[in-house]
Length: 358
Image 1 (cartoon, one colour):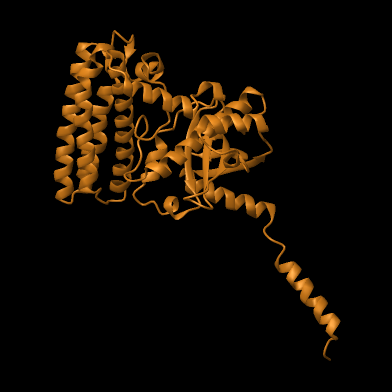
Image 2: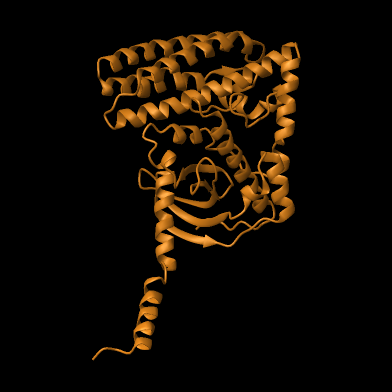
């Protein structure tokens, strides 16, 4: 017997309601775990949403310091998370999710902070530029921010003050000005070196060859770093400055061999030379250089005292930050959001609103 029309209509409505009920809270959380894993490259063992928000005045202040709009800081999400490291170790963190807009609509930036407010991992997902970034250019770009400390806006220069500081440096002609510019150049080049190493290891880890152009650019940057030795001598002392130049020369020799190995199609040899040998003979040697003028090892002393020498963090691509080739503007947008994320977490920590990680 054919059902009456009202009964058919009711049956259709009930079926539609059942089909459009949407994902459950558990399914949403599992999908979020997947997005986080893609972004950070770490498995998510536990994830618990946190209800946190910053006030309008704080958001306005953070936007001004980072050169963003207030709307860029809407819809922030927080989770307490337990991540699983590459060796199986558990990493407890507070996760901040920041939605992105142009040129990555639908994507998000994820920042993982430890209990002390240190940025231990970050990454992006939700757009082909990140999810299909086989050359790991964006992952390498973001890696230069790992280890930075969250803090309130007062701990950062405003975007206007950063521009003014750079402009004033460009107008001066003093030994102090030359030293500050050399420090900015050194910081940017070293960040670029670290990013290139990440990309080379990612490629050779898959048995693939990095492009010869990437290795040649890396070699050229070490030449530029060697040229900074004399400029840094008044700060670090003559002997460390000479040693710095020798280390740069050693790095260039290793990279010349790596370029030849790449031409020969030997990915394993490229990995050995650019990875373990570079780390042992150049990177560690540079980081362990001691300077009596600075009162300790070169790298940590320089990093902690840059502001004392007229080179505070500017968060500007091309000045103290490295960016992938031809990606200046989008890289600056991403860097500004990382800076804002550090301030958001800094504000919450200062106000005692941030819960301890799981």
